[in-house]
Amino acid sequence: QQQVKQSPQSLIVQKGGISIINCAYENTAFDYFPWYQQFPGKGPALLIAIRPDVSEKKEGRFTISFNKSAKQFSLHIMDSQPGDSATYFCAASIRGSTLGRLYFGRGTQLTVWP
Amino acid sequence: DAGITQSPRHKVTETGTPVTLRCHQTENHRYMYWYRQDPGHGLRLIHYSYGVKDTDKGEVSDGYSVSRSKTEDFLLTLESATSSQTSVYFCAISGEMNTEAFFGQGTRLTVV
Image 1 (cartoon, rainbow over the protein chains, first blue to last red):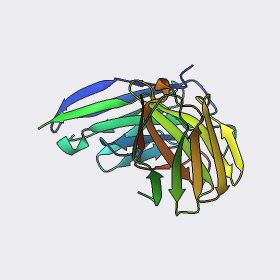
Image 2: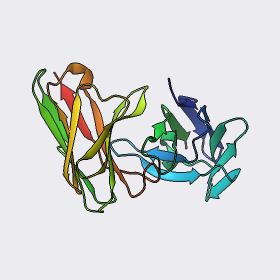
Image 3: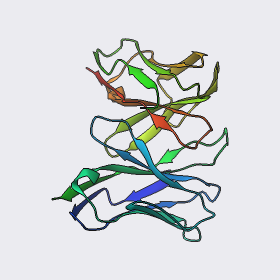
Image 4: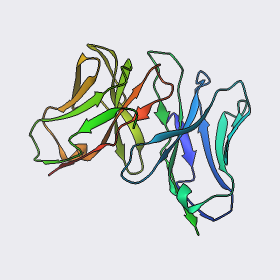
């Protein structure tokens, strides 16, 4: 079954607005939660990541919020810009485990209107 | 792009033919991965490698094999391509298992 569930599948936001993408997981052994950004024709690139010992991590306009008890984490993009239009993937893994792997959500296609 | 080169970038092949995709890295990273990306499915792991000649299956490994004879090269082979293997294939590398992974530009494979 799908290890990481991501929503929404697509998101349209006006320039300057807040974009919010949500992910949920089941495996409580996961201890690394990255977000990847992908532009058309390119490979995914790491945007920001969080470990479960903190509830929030901010880098510029991008913030990850993490709720360990609910097994949920989300990406917030403040002051969204047209250049943020891309597909975003959340993922989860068990760091350093040869039995583990990066499990990806199915992606959210974000469109920011100018 | 973190020193990852995938080749070819595009390929069209016929059903039943063998196909090999190559991933070459210049970062000397230990771990290498092959993913496929399909609409509605996100990125799914095909195979990964944790050292020279050390490989393991991912979640969608049927119909694929891999080899890693050198640290820098990770080959993905479709022994007999099928239309269901039409996809975009990404190679990724990481210095530590399952942490920051760097992706290549992708190979778009079409099986007709």
